[in-house]
Image (cartoon, rainbow, N blue to C red; front, side, top):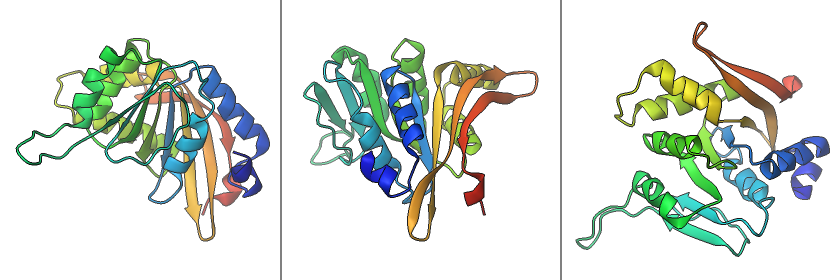
Length: 211
């Protein structure tokens, strides 16, 4: 984290705020475009998780490096040599059998967002994940669309209400020539079905960096 502060990726007070979010067991979604540093930030923020907590790490391919001792690593598998595929959704459904204190999902790409949402709704706070998006607001829309891809028949507004109650913080990363930086951090307060909008508070916004 000190390296990110020195590189200008984020300010010191914001680094401290992210640490506070992790220690307070907030569910954090890290968003950004390709190559914006989502996995790098997830790696670093994950180091704030206390050593005595059991972490379940789920990825498509192994990219996240965590030093905690009490770590269970799951990796998806393509069908091979007669063995069936093991999907991210399969791994999330198996997660509860391993008694995790924290669940880290490498990246949300599709229907596995629904399974993650179910876990968040059953009290698994302090989860971390990433999603491809160009703004914090779009990250929420992307998460919503991924839940809808799960094939589970749930009312649209019920899904958004669940997301509003379960997801706590979105950290948006930007990539510009020569640097990557945190452009926005928002705290999600809930979802308003009357306006069909998520209610969130902007904690940090680097408007000067906007194109």
